Length: 256
Image (cartoon, rainbow, N blue to C red; front, side):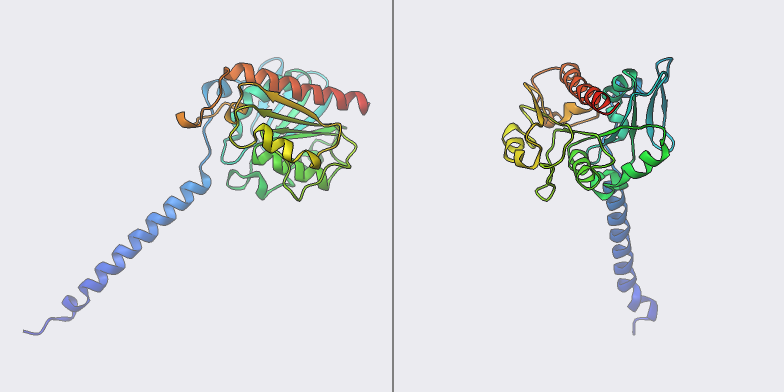
């Protein structure tokens, strides 16, 4: 008996169906990977509540607005694939000290794909005279890129657990730069930061946090094997906050 047409095409149809399922699964995985962001921990979520000192809003950017007079503004670029809210526990105290803090969302949670995000923020808050910019990890590298390209718009730079790209030379800029890094950071460790010191101004301020690591620059979920710190997160973050406030206080005094 000769096979009918449906019997002849059945294997081909099965193959096409399997390929379609593989393609759909790959597409779903790709979207999930590209859009994933490490979620904030409870301390960060608690810092998102507005009160008499700070108003927190999410639209169009995560913004911490002090209730009193705004001394200056701070734009913060998040680290790669990290929910911007994961930095709230560090940024809220800065706002409580009188500084407007704005955190833009980045394409696929990677600041390197929108290094000019600060432009819209500065234009939107036109009443703020002086701006500093900071960033964590790849966000710090991206903040350095923006500063190098727009020195007339930025009065100070704070690099958290990072360093400039080799193509980003800030050494001739006349503005305060703070490099803050953890002793036990497997990426932006003291040796890596030192090797790129020639890219920063000679009077750049360096703060090595003894016992600190890469991920305690925020309050977001990490894997156990990624935890290298030997000091509590709160202790590391106090030092980060204070150093960033020192930078902001400098630019308000130097640019009255």
